[in-house]
Image (cartoon, rainbow, N blue to C red; front, side, top):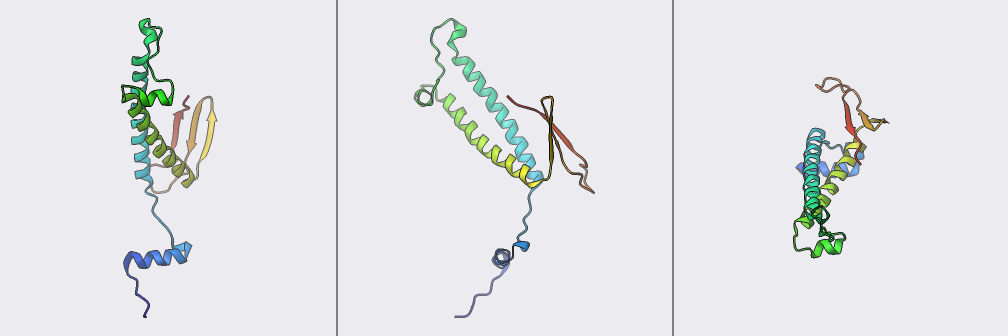
Length: 143
């Protein structure tokens, strides 16, 4: 049988497979950064929502001796109000995505990180010919 002739993506992928120098892919850095910002915003909202649910379930503030907030995973799964569990599971899902994306972004760009007096400073390398040159990102350390 004659060897099949490859065309299009099939041909390019085959070449990339045999020569790693040809295996170059776009990083979609701006889209990844934008997605990261959206995930941060969503996680902040979920964090606030969970804190509000905890406060509502805190019976000590109403003078009761019983704490109705689930204190274990088993109790959380068996609770009549499944909103707590839904928020916790949503946070878990988003954190998994967020952590993977942060790891990808931090591993794919050369940065220097300095931590002084509770502030994390990430210095990105200067890029010629871009609107963002010598960007310094600052964020407060979280708990």
